[in-house]
Image 1: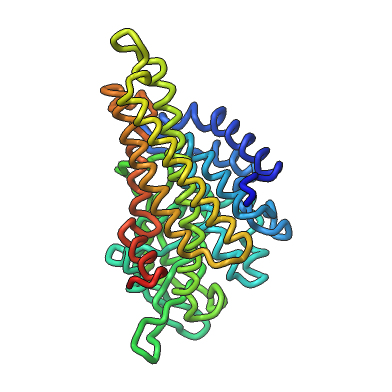
Image 2: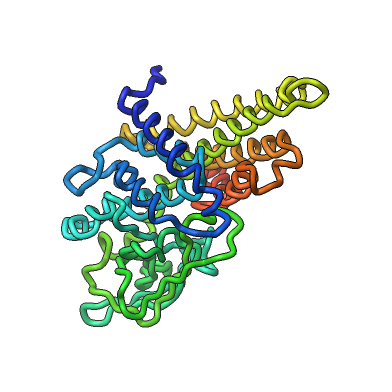
Length: 383
């Protein structure tokens, strides 16, 4: 077994880490405080090539493997969850469905600007009453002549209401199957379409520097050819999209956990109590040892899942495991890191406070930890 990353992947890790330290870290705390999306760092992330990383160069992408994309997301998350969320959602949920299921015209129309970071695209899945039960989507699309007429709403949609958002892919109920279950289709909706509105959400506990939106459809009309793939394939497309997205959430958990560890180790080596650094006390050293152990285990399971995906092997089980484990490892690392900071860990002037808040969404987004356990139980034959 060879666990060695390629030279290109090592160079990528180094360059993204350097970028995150120099360009994102100095502004992350202020953006979090102001609850502000940064178009400046967005532009710079695009120039670095952090969008469309796994997309063919034919459509303006970087032509890299999925592992490289995950490494880049991990390194951004090591410094800030909000920027990592923009990259992860921009690639896995925005670009991914268009690239994997779009026709040639759709790819040529949308992907080039998305791959440079000049534009963003959202993925409208979650609804006020359809979160974990995504198949129970109430947003409808009724065919009238050669147009879809869409009505309904979505919530908690990343990247959907920025000044550079071009549009969204929305999961819609387009009919009823013969077995009585809803027919679900993915439909492309451009940002300036009449009857469609994206509103930015505020007052978030976490990822305050990323863009989160509510979407509203009021007799919103789009051409029939805005179907993404075949009619009725939306649920299948959604499940495959979430498999890839879980790897990016896993990368955010892994990178966030590493960031927590780095902050905790640095602080505990500098903080002196009873005449020596607090890291020298066994109770604290053991916390750091546990963090290092779990981070190593998380990295192995996530990278294995990426290897399976890159080698076109089944990876759904491993994706769910990686998402679940990496998310919960970050929780434990953030908790230990705040404890090691003591009272200072509760103050906004210390970055660990932001990491502690940002972690929570990882247990919820792209399928809650409870749903991941259901998915894993089914895939191992227990349910």
